[in-house]
Amino acid sequence: MRLFLDTANIEEIREINRWGVLSGVTTNPTLVGKEGLTPEQVWKDILAEVDGDVSLETTEPQAPAMAEEGRRLAAMGDNAVVKVPMTPAGLQAGSKLVDEGIRINVTLVFSPAQAILAAEIGAYIVSPFLGRIDDAAADGMHALRQICQVYDVQGYDTQVLAASLRHPMHIVDAALAGADIATMPYEVFTKLVKHPLTEQGLEKFQSDWTELRKKLGSTEGA
Ligand code: E4P
Image 1 (cartoon, rainbow, N blue to C red):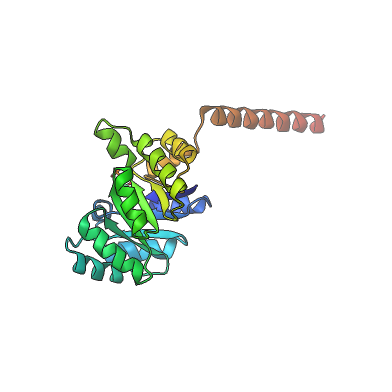
Image 2: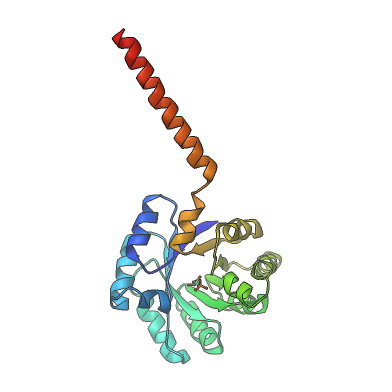
């Protein structure tokens, strides 16, 4: 399962990229709006920093304008993936972009029925929003499992990107469900590496090592 960061903050992206585990980035208008720069500058910096897929979201509501916007976004870099919403206009613009060879990510997906539509237009990625399904008192992980199962049974090539993930177990369960990609905020990414036993173990190894060096030092001096 590929790991993506769900952020538009270049510092967060640079830090996680140094770990060697970052395969891509997803952005949305809300995240881009937090950066205090023009969207073009934000996207340009991210596309240059990350080798893998970077999803850039369209905002035009009507299909022809959305498709035109999608072409502009796709032209920003070879690693750009164009996000279109799961709406009739998004499907219309998305299928046009797919026909033109542009990779699209169908976003704001909340059900297996919607995921089938995304696969049928040949989307490169489908993004079910697990956390937001949970927020609506439903079971986001159940929806993800069903989507993965349907895609498997039907042999769809569209990659399943588990989105709106809120904690490390979301990532583990998404991997078990068979998601191709998991995207998560910086706070969740940094939690993946942490375990109290790792911290305790490291502390003990370091203090034992210091002790040994001290002992050897005193023996050498005797
Ligand atoms: C994915 O592409 C979305 O940007 C994202 O995962 C939405 O997550 P949220 O529900 O935490 O805003």
